[in-house]
Length: 536
Image (cartoon, rainbow, N blue to C red; front, side):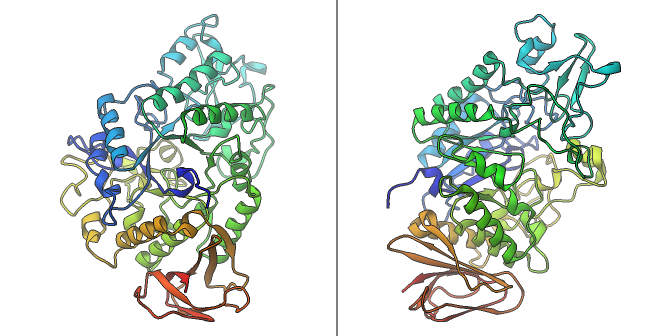
């Protein structure tokens, strides 16, 4: 097989740095904490998790109104997380282990304390005035149009000093950059080069399809929804045609460094993600469709087939079940059999065609935490409680062991530890061959050594049941069959002699031994069994 880029065959693990590991006892995770656990992530042996890259959520200087997604300096490290020397050491040590580093770039907006915005706000005639989106008031002092903030309320903030509104898609402390202004655009693109020169291997790009807004600032059409942002069709505040030119520039920068990548967080659905993950544009674009699917095999299959069709064979898929903005998959799907379902979800995510993204803690079946109202820190959680309780619950600290600080910190954690941390933690699962962590490790290392799983084509079997999902991953010389029983009852999958002749031996199963006898014609699956087979 022709070799594929590493970001197509590899597995990327997201680290929310505040919650991964705290090295200095202040209760907040940091870069040295990540460094101390690199061997856990990949030491080159199946004893480790085996991931190929880590995506680190923002670690740049920030006043913290949106916990790092309001950046005040793109070319430095926030002292909360360490120093630039700590970062350089992390890159070197990670590369030594074969782990690549992905940084989270938030270039749609900056902090209101970023020097660029401070200068832009200083006066209408200043050299950086047009680096942000400023507009005169409308009729009777109204906002320039009806655009809404994702975090609630109007997306326009009046500035008394210069007597104009500025646009903020999120918090008022996060003013949007004006990507139509060449100097601002160039400064943003220079950020890529700064970090690439320091050895970074790629970027996760925050709200990457919102960089450009309608040049005429027309009102968005109305839609049905609960919150303000959801009550509009977002025709004019994102997905403008000019964005394609920026994607080509970004791709050109990445290609000039050789082997570097970017994955875009696209605001929208499956079709929007596929539109931008094309040759010459973004290498990858997140498809979040799985995060809203019910626990039904047909729903996941339909989503995967639609994604494959939308990419039309030109783009490369990527899948995610959890991240720092969504409830954890073990919370959504756990039910009465949380460990079995966590293993099944892992098998689904790690055996489809495409690049899988894991969220820290998924590998131990970690669920959302419990955050009392008085301790909610997330801005939309504070605004919309109790209808929406924010994102804190999916950002709680990773429990490494059952000690008072869960091995995460010697101090008070910045968010409460999960109530079950004394039983659901890394140490408790590390040596248990039947644990969720052991299944993840076995599955990841199997994927690494099996070309059909990391690089092969995808073909759903015609004979699907209402309880199970079955599909082939195949190269010219290798066929691998994935079978997943989603429910708490046995089921069977019939193998047609025409398309799946011969016998199949199990490579890995969540419910049977690896030396189980081969099967032909009919595969019997135990309740919630995930089983991967190879043609004898």
